Amino acid sequence: MSNIKQFFLAIYISLVLTCQDRVVARSATMRDIIGPKISNWQVMVVNGLATSETLFIHCKSKEDDLGEHTLRLGDRFSWNFGENMLHSTLFWCYLSKDDGHMNVQVFWDDVILFHRCGWKKCVWTAKTDGLYLWNFANGQDLLLEKWEAGW
Image 1 (cartoon, rainbow, N blue to C red):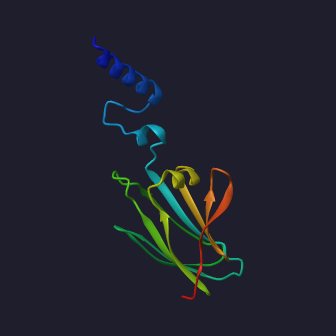
Image 2: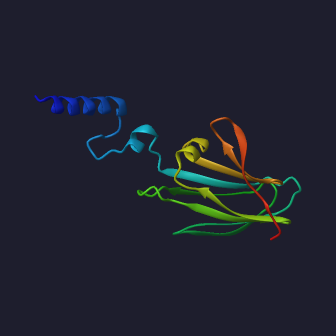
């Protein structure tokens, strides 16, 4: 066997041993090998405003309009979906409260986001100073967006 064939055979065997339950014979990418391939996700938006204000939200993607919702303190709105095969799934929301508003992405294809969401569930909480993402990796809320003044 030539050196090149031996080299590719060694690479193939190491990938098979490394990936164990993944089928490497298909055209696997490094993304499939490095991170868990979980396509079912949940996004949740929670009203955590300390002043008992209502939170108005309107979330959508390119394909789905999830409607308008008004959340009281402690209420939550969530949805489940599967990430598309092109890894281009994107959801965004418009949020408003008595003295502020924002347009924010709540799901996009990003390994850092996936890690923070524990590879399955993104939990966003609206608080008095902005929108926080629960970071499953370190068990803390992370402020990612501040309110814009007005409606």
